[in-house]
Length: 432
Image 1 (tube, rainbow, N blue to C red):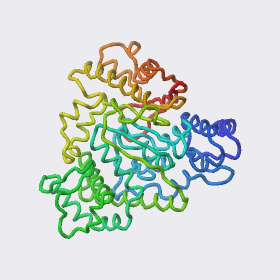
Image 2: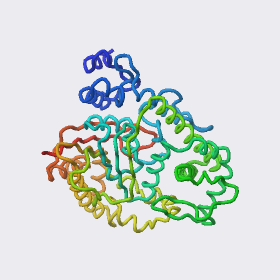
Image 3: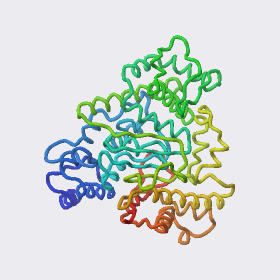
Image 4: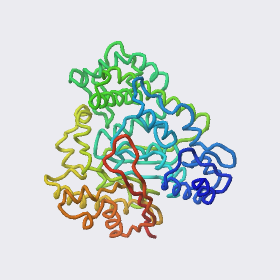
């Protein structure tokens, strides 16, 4: 009853919130949306409402129905997680590959709306990771550009974007031949089949006999290769099923969620924004001054996750030099923890300076950052009350270049396996 009264006080009676929206930050973002968008825009782009004036929102229609096509043998805990988060994550192609530290898709939609971004605007993610910002922006009709120093992140993000419009006929046909494909990918991993990098699109040097040429069309091939990477990673974490069995189930899920999304987008008649993922360094963003309408990113949690080691097998298959990548990746440069931390501070200052340069005046930069004072305290050998959390560090560095904090949303991190339990959404304004 208390929650019901709070909602009534926050929202007009014509706004019906989505079920299971009970986190404080969700109510805050929903309220911000209700203030920033009119009723028509809430229907078309809102993240937290099921209906407006009795009209179902596009987000509700995109997410409703089957929660997620999970393979046979999926444990009950995992199934319940996706059921509880039906409208938060797993829709469209966000669920392709379970990347560690990935963004929360519905939250990203709410932040983009709070920032006042509209179809035709351009949003930047300078450290895009698994590409959630780019995928969500594209779905909303917002143009997006992203960069990441990791070739695997560039490949993963491009694949998620490509899969939004991939040919379902050939993707579904590949599922029926998953055993044949898995044997081919095993040969690829063993070095018996070589791939070449064509502007960060990775193809086998020779097309195997008996394979339909359409499987090697860029969008289909990328989906198949990412599903293989996913199955290899799953096999490293669990031995309950064989990698071949996992590959079939994962590929089947990829195709199912993509088919559902494409059918819903066609039924809604929505036009997607243009999004492009590049391999690049956030400390030197190759964009003109004052060229983007908004920025949304999350700095790497390199103190908690070694992204090079985490993706090592995938990076090797893509031909990446791991030592070179580690030397360039923010948070991994240096030998001792102190050296890594000092390099991290220096690098983040450069990233924020670049963000300030490319952002238009009067526009917002949103940073999502986990709080980890206890971890930093132990590593740096000082008491928790004397160490800046990464959230405080971001605020101090942003303020030093004239980006002012205008709002902070606090969010509990809820998931299957997380090293941090809280994070902040920091909203900065670039002054005129």
